[in-house]
Amino acid sequence: MTDLSSLTATELAPLLESKQLSPVEITQSIIERINTIDPSVNAYITTLHELALLQAQHAETEIMNGLYKGPLHGIPIGIKDNYYTKGIRTTVGSKILADFIPDETATAVEKLLAAGGIMLGKLNMHEFGGGLTNTNPVYGNSRNPWDTNYSPGGSSGGSGAALAAGLATLATGTDTFGSIRVPASMCGVYGLKPTYGLVSTKGVAPLAWSLDHAGPMARSVSDIAIMLNTMAGYDPKDPGSIKAPIPNYTENLHKGIKGLTIGIPTYYLEGLDPAVEALFKNAMKSFELLGAEIKQINIPELTMSTFASYIITIGEASTYHYEWLQTVPDDYADDVRIFFNTGVITNTPQYVRSQQVRRVLVEGLKKAFEDVDVIAGPTIPITTPAFKENWVEQNLEITRRCMPFTSPPNLTGTPSLSVPIGRCSAGLPVGMQLIGQHFSEKQLLQVGSEWEKTNPLNTTLYSV
Image (tube, rainbow, N blue to C red):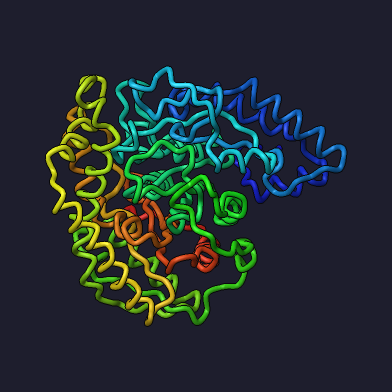
């Protein structure tokens, strides 16, 4: 019998709808796997086995009575621990909020549960979203299921690890300067940072308000589309939410990419680890074979993105954390405290200038999209790192290396989908991001779906 924990939501949904499978069977299967495997992966901070089984039983009753709600009905989902869940501990990966019990549930979680999703638990994360490795001295490091000596990426590291290890069918993530796409890349899964304002961040603990995005993570592009169909939409309770038509994101998944032009900014070809460079070049050749035109382009404005992203992130984060940084500084992990404290010493002119840079970046990308349909580049320039003893310095260095690659879509609010493109010689996954114009998620998923058919994780460069 097929291991139920390895199946995607797209594969499970028709089995649930036709009553060949029960939500209880699926949930029990994944809970058993969590009990067996999570002690070595540490994807969860809080498991909710009893609640999950109650929700699964309720979903089963509904489906048996002909009340099937759609492709999320009865599907187990892991929730990143910065999404508020009413009556359930939400730590945001921090000692400071170790006992925090919200009195509300994040809008995105409410939507997923209303669609019949089963909440398995709250997933581990880099403290307050302030890093890209998921080292966590309070709740323990999440570890990469491909090799537990390696990082799963962050800050949504528990989400990436849970998906790669079969400890959740779907997962939520957040992304301020790469926190969905980095773990998606390092764990060999799919992660979408949507257009800013497309998915509500109401009830999501902030890192930097004007850069924060909530989005889906999964083991297939079609699963991302299914989640986005539910998560997207205007929320009057979220001041950043945008009123926009919501298409059916699954519609064009089998349309192919013949005739599309994919632009490769020269900016994304610099400073790459050899394995990342080789796998990305391979991917571009594959895109040509699939019928796309590849065009190298120059977007000089991208060089300003690191400065702007860094100043805005630490400026807004230090504002949110100002009181705690004064009163309980030792309760922060060392790397996060250093990161946030730098925001205390930045000044208003730097912040305003950084916000002005965002408009310049938006215009630069807008101009680029006059000639191309989609922009592609490595998700991050480095291969997945092993955990090191000097983890504070390592985390700051990894942020320095990766932020130039991941931050442009956050600054511009454009959507970016991370997809696997193969594995390096150590066997760890490597990812590529597809960037589109605002509200072009449907097209990005179309491209990603065609790419997924190449079975990218079977591509391994043992010579690099």
